[in-house]
Image (tube, rainbow, N blue to C red; front, side):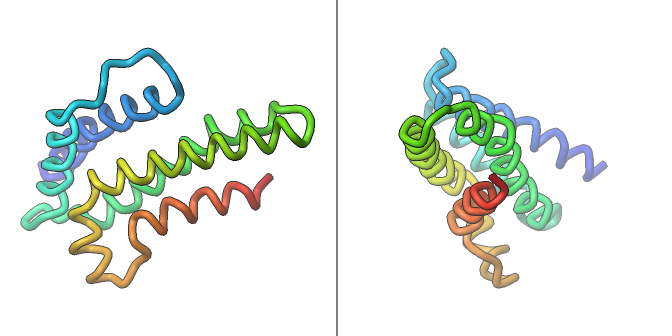
Length: 140
């Protein structure tokens, strides 16, 4: 039963993440309004709080979302560029987009930073998000 709550809640969060990715990628999308952000934040709060406390799973999924985005969208966009200048311009653009994505998502997952991350001495959500980009650049 509780696992169903995790999957149901994650579906809500994922819809918002998909919207954010579309906006960042320039896909026509309605704006990310306060209601959507609040619903995502509330869902993360509920899933990360007792009695459910899926904090560990949420932290892993946060990193997973960023890694998937980087692997499926960012890396191919950089690799398809020919020439040092155009590749570097794409890398800078993608880094700027990644910073926006990490900033927006770390706000949604802020409850984890305040509780789970501190309790487990893990990297903050922003640090973990930026580390995902660094790992990607090393794979190139």
